[in-house]
Length: 206
Length: 206
DNA sequence: GCACTGTTTTGAACGATGTTCATTTTATCG
DNA sequence: CGATAAAATGAACATCGTTCAAAACAGTGC
Image (cartoon, rainbow over all chains, first blue to last red):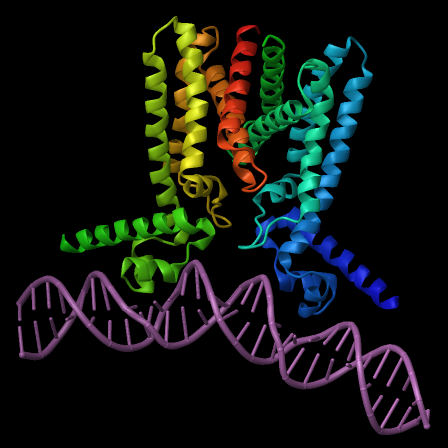
């Protein structure tokens, strides 16, 4: 009992330290010895709680996904609440989701990058529960799409949601890539909303 | 004279070995000792030709960018040659570029991934000539966009080209991500062309 | 208290890695 | 050929993630 409590405490301390390190210096700076020092434990103690550093990185990414999920949910609800026709609201939600995604990425740059930079070590693959967390993000898009494209089957809608998310993700990714040469955030946001709006119009006139 | 020839030979042998290694086992498997063995040189010899392994990775990526550039040019020309109105041709070119990009990524998966997985070591940044190679890809999109959106300024068109490329890149990236859960290529190609076509329609009706 | 036993924690040690640089080899020239 | 400069070499170093024999600890019976 006390034992597992101690382990749980250490687990949290390690995730906290890893999250802080990633936020400050990026995923590549996740070093076992730094973590042990930061969390106040022995080097080997890390491996009594996580099988390896990859599992710790997944734990951090899982936190980030949950935060992103909450952020997108909030953005969608705010856009939905503004009234208007269902189609207008749905279009607003799509744009709000894209803009919200961009703002999240820009506002938590290092942690957001870690979501996609991270690769499982050779031979292992992502735990299913983490893949599910990722897939859940697409769900935010499916609701407005159901309004805009009521003729689509559930599977078709899921595919389209995935594609739209991916397109927005690409714009955010390449838009934030170079810290120096990249666009100022407001211009980038304008581009993202413009393209998403164009996709919305194009889909309606399909 | 003979000296610089020998260096040039070694340089090519190293890039060849690195390219083969990346193609077969990914960017993460770029190991100095493997390269030296493969290229038939001493470990230290690598550092007489490249300042570090990052520079070697950039050399490989540069090759890949040139190959991608040629592939996209070919795809655009083929789509252009099919005739029809200028607008129809331009729309075809946009779709052909997206599909061509997808096929390139799927057909040279590991090398294509290396283009975007690679990060410069702390403190250094990408050589400008390599950034230029990347930016040149957007140029392929600017020509059809000039037809579809003649009212745009050069800068606006460049921005839009960048955004459209980024959107397509995102779809390809996430579409090819999971080796297991990912879509079969034909379905993915259909999604990409569908979304790109929708963006084209949406932009026309802006 | 103490001895015995099983569990948990620890950090030195291991194997890999990128990079350096004293040493060795090779080339050049008088 | 001998002397000197240039180039190539690979052992050595610093830094990783990870392991595991040893030490510290916790419980139990007497």
